[in-house]
Image (cartoon, rainbow, N blue to C red; front, side, top):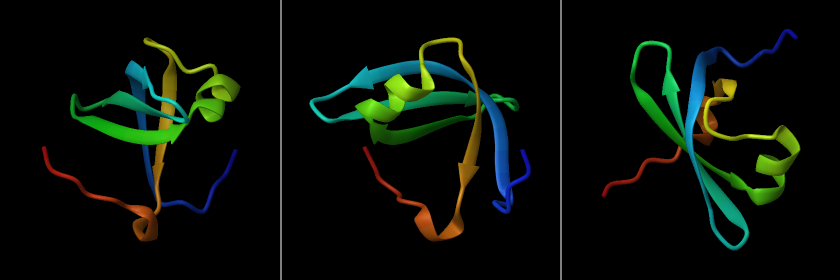
Length: 69
């Protein structure tokens, strides 16, 4: 598949935490860094995301949200 999104990284799901409607998915990138994404539970089910699943992370510069702990 060819996409226009320029920020593409390969990674592996390391955790999926489900909430009422949303889920938080943590991905370890090929270089060892981690990235977290909040997606719907339906998306988790549709993509069959679970620990160990290889994924491709796509980031649109207009869709980045930052947070602090």
